[in-house]
Image (cartoon, rainbow, N blue to C red):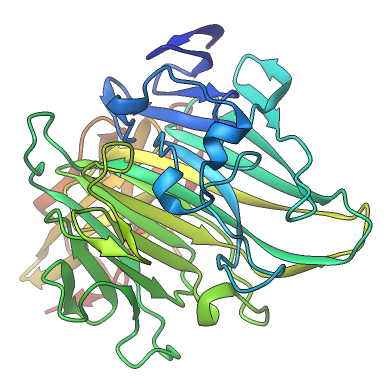
Length: 411
């Protein structure tokens, strides 16, 4: 477990590493987590045109339009709703304080870094970002806090935007990049999602599974929003999987007509009057965006929200996720004679073992090693179970950490 201050593509960064996942936090460009790795695999887009570059607030603001935005990449926290029609909307990016300001480093420990923005007079907010790596898992906790530092009442949502690399480094789209978001079964949107930018029949939008909305990146510009209630969104880069997990308050108000998750797909074209093929905006990436509830804050008040990051090897698309693992092929058990056959493909977020058990009893039908760096594939015959089954995760000490999946027995 190590922490060190070093150079990341030309910027001073705080590097956190727990032996499974690692992160580079760059305070000087909006307090971004500019890269996140599982093993040696990097998930996040980093704009090569801006690597190591720092600008004055005046340069970051430019003419005040998105054409002046310095899109560094990585993960950052913005206020929502976004808009340009009044003081209750965040007119960015560009933004010389919350998006690209020089954040202050408040604390650095073995697996923890805390950075804080300057006070922002436009929104009245000061944002603190705390990243904590779990000690023995491919897990991280990102705690975001917004504090009202103005003398007026404000109402904002914490909006996290994570840019995922979808290019192959040679100008082509990397195959196998996709996003999965559970669809709210009683969605307020007619199709379970709302198209915010780009054509409604965008070839990247996949609705083959009515319960999970899919996006297969093809280098086209577009954006969708979903009022998903499941509390997770997953990105796949072939079998490398990165998830955000979060709480949803069904009684709260959310920005953009009730969206809890939004996805932007970067590509050439024009949106909101801006040409996104400019050098500082160009790239091949998807944005995994999580929006929190709108919260009213009196002067001096603050609100926090947690975002859990989890990573593993699991071929996509992801169809389900829990706190300890994710699923590509749902658990299926078919009985035949005195035995049964079990199938399924999963990913787990911590080293240890996985056990297939009968629910409500201590009977273990299967016990196999499991860990974040290899998919967990089941395709074998077991003793015939008497009832429904669950797949559970155990840590390296043998303690149960949670359920990965559940299945009913069929004949």
